[in-house]
Structures are given as structure tokens and as C-alpha cells.
Image (cartoon, rainbow over all chains, first blue to last red; front, side, top):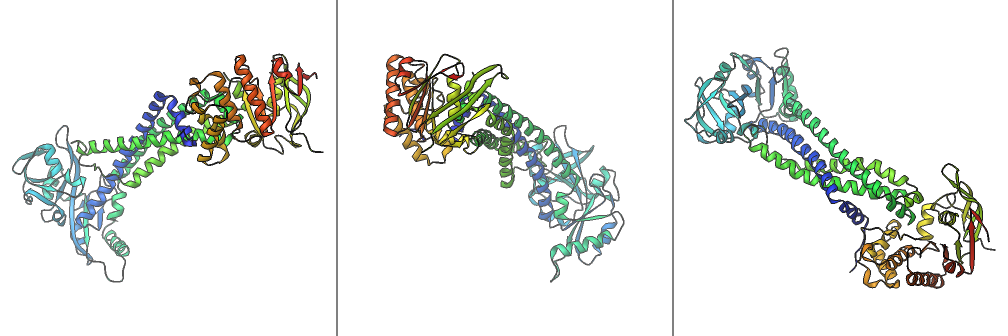
Length: 377
Length: 221
């Protein structure tokens, strides 16, 4: 059977004509989409991990000062929160991102030895730490990266701690983390009597009241305890903290630049392609192709480049996330999970980038006079 | 009395900001089913006139009518070219990346016809042109005569009523020239099409029942 020609088949043949140029253009858009998948995926997974962190421990409300980086609350506030009738448990905590070795940094938490949050951790070896003792437990990923096991010691901010247990946490923020007694964390970070935040677990929602309304009501009561204190629902807190905001901003900013480079690449390729095919476009017009058919052909080629670059970019971006998730420097905050919505969004952005890049060359191609184009040498 | 299929009235066309006059007020009438040749020296304006009649170019002044309707006003130029006119060029103008059968189909891509229909029609036309064994060949794998036959098949793809050929034998040897002219005349007779050929070859010019001579942008006879 002879060859059947479709519109997309024709576009494909045009793209294959200059294979090296098409390949290089694909590399550009692949890098742009790869950066988008990796960076935005990273920032979103970071937010997601925060949410899971709250969910896995059963935290309903996070109480803190105005901002996460310098939030500092008096530890005594915990007793007043606990006194509220709706509150089942309060877990004060101090945390910070600390360099453990020149290559490895990790989230270090200070929790009370009896914190309800410890119940959500599954210990794979050893035991919990004891209050008042220079002891720590390590997430399994961090323990693996540092090659530590129960009984070993670890130096944090110049102090030596004994590893008492290795746990498997439900999130990347836990599996790459260090947890030590709250009092020890307060000492090494010179924050005696102060905490970063309180995590609050509520009693069951009263019958006839929605969970959201219940949480809102308790938030108001907590905030009334002391001026300058902010109580946030855990789900909101996950998406509304400065670290996550910063990660989102950096991710979108960086990937936008990478995408812009990809778009310029496609635009250049399509402009060159239209220029080279001036006479062919004249032939098509002579055959009765309307301007909109020429536009459709060029946009199909540009969108095809975007689509192919998008698919490759997804593979590259996901690969980059996988590498980040196992690198000691970043393992504590990166998970490999990328939502299908994010992948679909990436593909749409890739195709959209192709269409944007192809718009001007397509418009130019459609405006060519058939007879002038036929004369073109 | 029915309108002529094509009519040019006082056609004027100049290039290079008016410094080069290609047509200086040409009046021409072509009846449906007529076979007309247009000849003249290089630069006389014969190709320009053909482009005007086929809706490829527009005059600076004057008008072209298709069955009494004004081209570019009442009749859309793109629709006219795709549905009513088939063009054949001296340089064949086949697309180098497409096979022979695809080159014929490309003319039908803008017509919203089914893919199967496009392939069947392209295959049938190429077989009619004696190119059954050349369907999958690329233009650079075909002889000049074969390329022009592919171009003729492409011109017929959308079943036009008018066939306009601009020096169709200009790049061919005498054997292939004779062959192509025989094909064109045969098509006209079988399909009752209007055939207008621009040529500088006296023999071809004289072969038509009506021969128009053009010189310096004006019709002589």
C-alpha cells in the first residue's frame, strides 16, 4: 500500500528534514521542561511532605510566632494551650537546618521525650532517646548516608550525641532528619525556655460541627491566649510557610528562565524553517492552501516539538528528582513522588511553549504572497 | 448567454514601484472548455497574466472575473485556487520530502476530504499518468518527464474546471514535451476542462484552436 499523507504526517516529515536542528531544539525545550518538572516538582513535593508530616503525627494545628525562620515562643505557653478543653495533646518543638558534615545537612528537631509525635515513627533498630540525655534518633535515610547505627556517636554544633535508634518516617522530612530531646536542642541552639512552635492535636470533633469549623474555633481561642501568636490549621501551614514559599518562588523563577530559553530555541527553529521553505509555502498556497492551513501546519510542527520536548523533559526532570532524593545534601527534603497533575501540567506548558514560539513564524508564513513565494530562490 | 469562465478586464500590473510594467491594460476572455495558448518573448507579461487569471496574483488595476463573479471580492482567491484551478509549473515545484503519491495528496489536505479518499484519488491519478511503479518515489528519484506528470496529477487532485500551465515543457526534452502535451490535451478532451498554456514554443502555441500573442504587456492578436 502506498503512503497515506495526513496533516500531522506532513508536519513530522518537515521536522525530520533538518534532524540535527530539530534535535538541538528538542534539547532546549527538554532542558526547560526538565527544570520545570524537577524544580517545581521539588517545591511541591516539599510542601506535600510538610503536609504529610503533620498528618502522620495527627497534628491539627501549628502554633507559632509571625514567621517560621525566627519564630520563638515561650515554652510556658504550651501549658496554657493544653488547658483548653478541646486540646488532647501539645508537642513543643525546636527545629533548624544544620550542617552535620561538610557535605550533609539535615533538619534537626528537638522534641520532648514523651511527644505524641514520636508515636508515628517506626523504629527499625534501637530505642527512643531519653529526656536530658545527649542522645538522638536518626531517620533511616540519614543513618544510611552517614553510615550510623545505634551506639555510634554524632557531632552536632560541636556537641557529641549518642545514636539510640534508627526510625523509618513516613516523609522525606523525617527519613532524613535528626530528632533529639527538646532540652538538648534548646541548649545547643541557645534557646533555653523557648520553642519554635507547638503542634496541637485536638480531641474528636463534636457532633454536629464540621472539622474545619472546629479547628477554626480552637485557632481563635489559642490566638486569644497571647498577642502575636498565630495558630494555623496543619493543612494551611504546609502550604503557607516561608520555606515552602521560598522554594516555590525559586523553582518558578528558575524554570521560567529555562522555559524561556526553550521557547526562543523553538521560535528560532520555526523562523528558520519558514524562511527556508518560502517557495514551498508558495506552492501550497498555489495549490489552494489558505493562510490558516499554513498557520496550522507550522503550529503543528512547533507544538510537536513542544510535545516531544515535554515528554523528554518529564523523563529528565523525574530523573533529576530521583538523583536529588538520594544525594546526602538534599535527601532530607526531596521525595521522588511527582503528581500526575504536575506531569500533565508540564506537558501542557511544553505544548503551549511550542505554540507561543511558533505563532510569529506561522503568521509570517501565512502572510507570504503566493506568487512572491514561488519566485523565491 | 452564459458568462465566460474567465475574464480579465483592463489588467494592469507593474513591479518595482511602477518602474517595470508587466501588463498594460490587458483584456482577455476565455470560454469554458476552451484550449488557449499564450505566447510571447521573455518579460512580455504572459506568466503574470496567467497568475492573474489563476488568482495567484492581483492586478494593480482592472479586474478578473470567474463565471461573471469578481475574483478576490465575490470569489475568495484561496477557495478559487483550491477548487477551480490546477496549476502546472515549468519547474514542477514538487515538495522534495514527499513521495510522488504524497505530493498529489498534499493538494487535497486543505479540502477536508477523508484520508482514504485522498490516497485512492492520488493513486488513481498517478496510475492515469502512467506512474503506477513510481508512487513511492521521491522527486529526486524521478526523471523530469515523470516529475511533470506527478505535477499534472497534483493539479488534477481537486478536480478543477481550469488547468493553467506555465511553460509546462520548458524543462523537458522533445520526447517528454510531446508526451506531456498529449497528456494535457487528452485531459482537456476527456474532462471537458478549460486549458490555458503559457509557452514560448511556437509549435505548442500553434497547436491550440486559439492562440494569444503578448508583447510588452499588451495583447497583439
